[in-house]
Length: 217
Picture 1 (cartoon, rainbow, N blue to C red):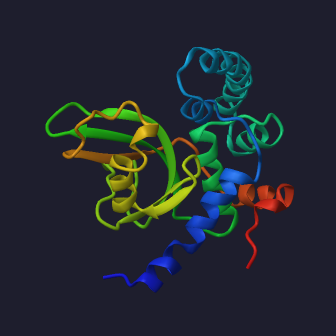
Picture 2 (cartoon, helix red, strand yellow):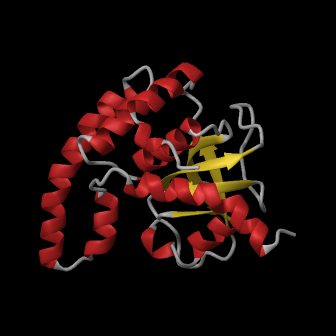
């Protein structure tokens, strides 16, 4: 059993990473705006106008991002210079911050959920996560109990996987309209992105170019 003090110590750096990825580069997140604006007519019009502008800028950056040999510098460019990004960019930035600060056990992945024996569906949400488990493409990856820590800059939170997934069913449920009304028997899984190779040379280059990502001791 992890004590309160031990829990705080384990989650200290992940929490700092989540907050830094959330705040360091002020930017527009269309999905976050839609959650905050609401649905009445005038607010919807404002949302539509913002959507056209933000999605245009973000789509352009994602074309560049997914066509790059390594997307990490492009992710930073999108957030820092173009000032746009959604959960994917924020989660990837959290992974970058973790790696720049010496963590090799941090990755980015998509969340899937299933209910009972029903077909698995995507939550359409991306997070960073820390785990010592093998996440090679040959394995079906699922974090149960306290086998990992989820870092979610979009929600500005870091927590043990089991506790984070519980919060998705409760306090964070209003942010995810894909979740059904009755969610007691829902289980979650994180599918890591494995297509990008990260080497020490790239991380050293990012340290030099973006020193603001280095955490204070």
